[in-house]
Image 1 (spheres, one colour):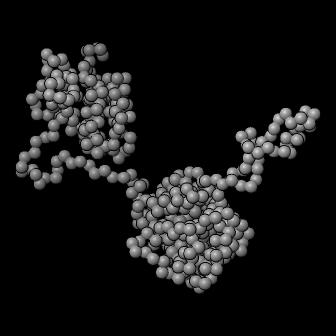
Image 2 (cartoon, rainbow, N blue to C red):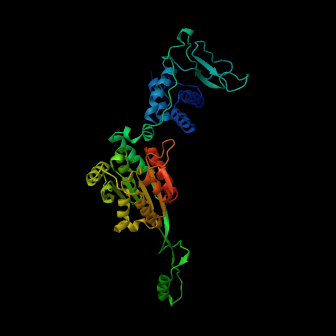
Image 3 (tube, rainbow, N blue to C red):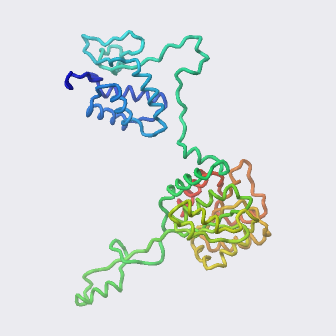
Length: 399
């Protein structure tokens, strides 16, 4: 048999109607398909008419399946539709009605009672008959449960339930969520042709070449720079479960927002140059080695004062200060209030991330947390990567 005489599936059938019917069956089973995927299937069937069942399978799979998690649903529906089909029924004229009494395939009219056969959808499949004895059997056709992607599901889990590889993957996703950091206008001006302000010195310098006539007017506008960010994270014993995830958050800020990041327990450690390493695993390992007092006691007020007194304290001026801690502090609360008041006078905004803030009925009863709260713009939960993503979105939107 020549290629021209070889049987072609769907010969004479309406490809658009077939695609709509098949996509509707997939959507009822839980696979997400839209108009774009349906159009892709119609175009693919027109470009390469299927000559066998396996070619139709691959054509439909490439056109309709976008995620690996949807393959099982697609295979189940495709098998339910085509396993017992020898040849697909065709759209025929009104004089040759397309009738099938096999109990599996029926014609679907386009609408109305007087629709002629062949003018509606080419075919549809009926569910297999289920007897009363099988009512309690769960082994029949089941609609698959729609689940979020694996990464989105992990983002909702507490940090202590995640392993190292999952934390690293969620850290990459966190850095991708922080694609761009907002910029602010500074007092500096730079030459720019779209500026509204005339740059006098460059304009006069060019006028010297034209007999002191300002033929060319040089313009300038305000320079925009990213809003400064200072991130200070608690890695003491009470924050053991959150330490690895907070290191990923610090790395995201160090790479994307050019932030100054610090970790503290009893002493302060600057991690900005370490966390900017190209390799995430090496950066976290070097940061863990650099924090010598990790999982020790906690001195929040003393370390915040150390940031203010260091030469990095100027980074707080007009910047956003993010403190990630549960508030347990061995320093007196009066010292915390005094340090937070100094920091409030320098910073543009102050955000406190507390892993326990998302718990139902949470109130800041810890003395240090209660003393620091009046100086904070926001107190936000930070017990999952979803909380961290929400906090980043909040901070960036108001920067």
